[in-house]
Length: 58
Length: 98
Image (cartoon, rainbow over all chains, first blue to last red; front, side):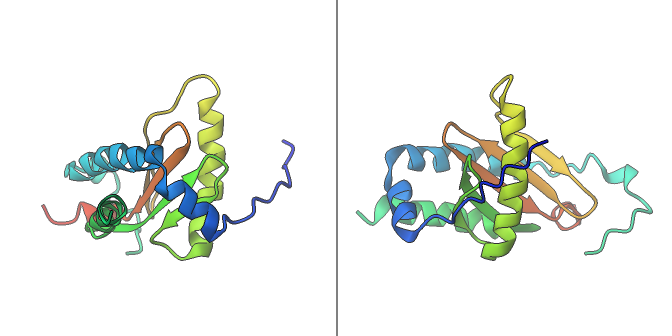
């Protein structure tokens, strides 16, 4: 695997402002946040009975 | 014009205040953070790690949602055309009492 050394620069405040103001970004946040919130509403932990004895540091 | 960006902040805040949620990252497909509720360094780490994963998965078909569970955390990844939303949560807190 060629580890591309294209170390991404951090976006500047200017660049971020441009992105955040764009309509497609707003659409994106709208849609994806709904999706995630729905997933977060799922209260059933399907791993529950299988993680007993697994040390989870909380 | 307070509306859109204020509404977005509100959404981000609402998700990040959910029980067990450690943080949110909004990034582009290059793994560059656009918005986050986490420390910049930590966000960068997750962004870097998962942008690679999304890219790989993206080659054959567009990934729409991905949930990864590890001992310590659970990550939800919701990619879109240009951007990706990541939510990192601690499942032991999220699913605690019922």
